[in-house]
Amino acid sequence: MMRDLAERIILTIEQAGGEAYIVGGAVRDLLLGRDPGDIDLATSLFPEEVSRLFENVIPTGIDHGTVTVVLEHHPFEVTTFRSESTYTDRRRPDTVSLGVSLEEDLMRRDFTINAMALKRDRLVDLFGGQDDLQRKLVRTVGDPYERFSEDALRMLRAFRFMSQLGFALESDTERAIVRLKESIDHVAMERIAIEMEKLMVGEGRIDALTALRRTGINEELAGLTDDVLLRLIDCKYAAKTKHEVWALFVHSGFEVSELRRWKRSNAQVLRAKKLAPLLDKESLSASERYALTDEELAALNEMTGRSHPSRDELPIRHRRELAVDGKDMKALGLMKEEIKEALAYVEEGVLHSRLKNERDILLKEVLLWKERRKN
Ligand code: ATP
Ligand code: MG
Figure 1 (cartoon, rainbow, N blue to C red):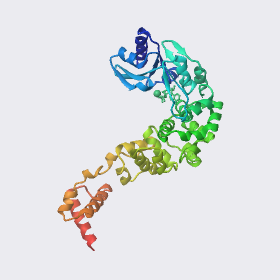
Figure 2 (cartoon, protein in one colour):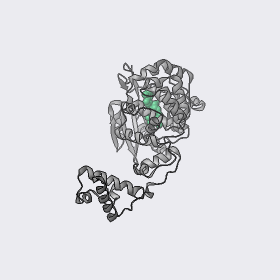
Figure 3 (cartoon, rainbow, N blue to C red):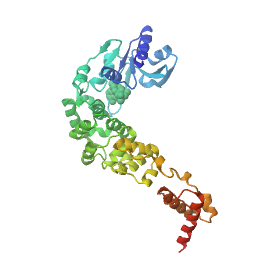
Figure 4 (cartoon, rainbow, N blue to C red):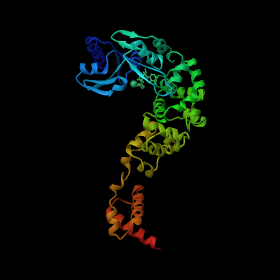
């Protein structure tokens, strides 16, 4: 279906005198019989020319030669064949040249399995990508020292693809990482974190983490000590989505303060802090379940394979379900701090089924509580 739409874009471009191919990860996934998340195309036409050929086109990256063509609600990134010249900062190419050949476009890509092009029944495979797919190997296009020197992020991408595909690391490629690992500090932590999230949810994460440890590149990544990495490798829990990854890190001894250095959002940090200490608990108390959202509890079950009872079985699920509120406390003559404490007190009682969630009962209980406090 998606493939058919992509082939339609290729035909339209050909009818306008251009050339176009499916490229990158989509070719890899199609050859593996996996569902490619999205399909990217490369073309000889310039973005303005592509834009003229289709009704719904979004200029998503004109500077890099990319427009997004939307066909039957499916977005396709269509990028003009391009090459990238010297990476003096080991992060970004100094210049991007559009309008080169398909061969040059494929040459700039990171790994052989990601450097093939496909249209109809024609596969362009200049670097042995098919062989490497068959042998299940992650190998750079060309000299690994050069390719990792151009862009250090590729070293982490290698482990990420190992994990996602269950592949091994080709030995020269691994040796180059060992030699160039220090250069990973040129890469923004944000981008490193994103690769790590993808690695951690992959089927082959144990092997990928083990290879990563073997190269020692983790020592260049703040907070990812050998000890943390070993615990991650041995961890019996798994993250199903990227939102769960950081809880596993914290559970394995990764410092919460390092999460901020890795540019994780407040929401991600809070979630990791909240879930990590609960992972090893065989059962959760009523207050522990109450403190979680339904979604967090579901994540905990998913990661551990346990089946903690649903929050629906708690006497109350939110403070707003309590039969009394702040106004009631005020009416009883309580002041600011007292109000908070009194509500927390009855909330606790209700949650543990010591008190029935009924207004009269709770009001009476608050009065008793106030009396007791006076003495
Ligand atoms: P995913 O399924 O995660 O999207 P992908 O292979 O599509 O995997 P992307 O990061 O989306 O990976 O990149 C798309 C393609 O662009 C890659 O397959 C590769 O050919 C090329 N590419 C991406 N990043 C780099 C890089 N840092 N260096 C060289 N080529 C790259
Ligand atoms: Mg992609």
